[in-house]
Amino acid sequence: MIRQNGRMGKVIVVGSLNVDSIVTVERHPRPGETLIGGDLQTMFGGKGANQAVAAAMAAAQVSMIGRVGDDAMGEQYIARLAAFDIDVDEVRVDPSSPTGHAAIAVAADGENTIIVSPGANGRVSVDDLGSLDDLSEGDVVLLQLELSIDVVEDAARRAAAAGARVVLNLAPYADVSEDVLSLADPVIVNEHEAQLMRAAGRDPRSVLITLGADGASWGDISVPADRVDEVVDTTGAGDSFCGTLAARLAAGEHREAAMRAAAAAAAVSVGWPGAQPSEP
Image: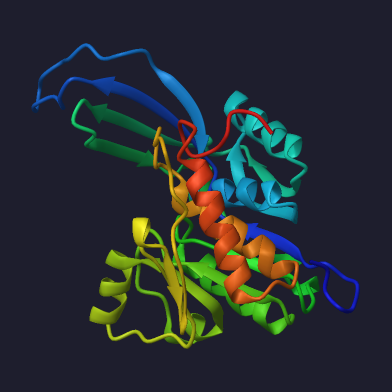
C-alpha cells in the first residue's frame, strides 16, 4: 500500500550488529569442566540488524545505523546487509573495537547460555545519529535496547522532533525514560517485558504486546498467530515481527493489517535456523 501523498516512508533502524557463534552440547558444563560439543556454527545476529533484514524482506526502503569492528566479520556483515538492499552508509567501522559477538551454547533440552561481547555496538554514540534530523513524516525509526540507553533515547527524541514515527522494541528490557516511551507508537513488548514495564509503573500511550502462539494485541486490536507446521528455530521471530511491522507502517498500512503481516513473517521465520535467513 502506498501512502496517499505518493511517498512511501523509509525505515531507519538504529541498533546492534552481532556475529553469533553457536555450539550444541549434550548438557551445559559445570564450573571448571570441559565438554566436547558439536560443530561450530557462525551466524549473523544482533536485534538491530535482524529487524533491518526483516523490514527489507517486507519490501521497505531500509537504512541501518550502527557500528562494526575493523575486522573480517564486520566487513562481511556490511556486505551482507547491502545484499539485502539495506543502506549501510551510516554503519561505521570502528577501528578501536571488534565486531559485536555472542557465544551461545545450546543443550539437548533446548536450554541455552549466551555470553555477549558488545564490541563496536558499545561505541555507538549520539554523534552517529545526525541523519535522523533530516527525516520526515511517514518515515519510521525502529529502536531496540542493545545499544546504550542514552543513544536510544536521543534517537527517539530526534526522530520525533523531525516528524518521524518512533517504534520502540523494549528488548532486552531496561528502564527507559517516560517521555521517550510516550513518543513511541508503538512500544513493542512480549508478555514478560509487559509485566516488567508495569511493575516499574510505566504506562505508555501505545503498547503492542506479542503473545507467542496466541498472536498479538495493540490497544483494542488483536490478531492471531499464523499456524506453523514445523518449528526449526524460534530465534529471531520477535525481530521478524518488529521489522515487518515497521515496514508496513512506513507503507501507510493500518494497525491491524500491519500486525497480521508481522505475525505471518514471524511464523515464516521459525522455519530457518538462526535469527536471519541464510541468503537474501
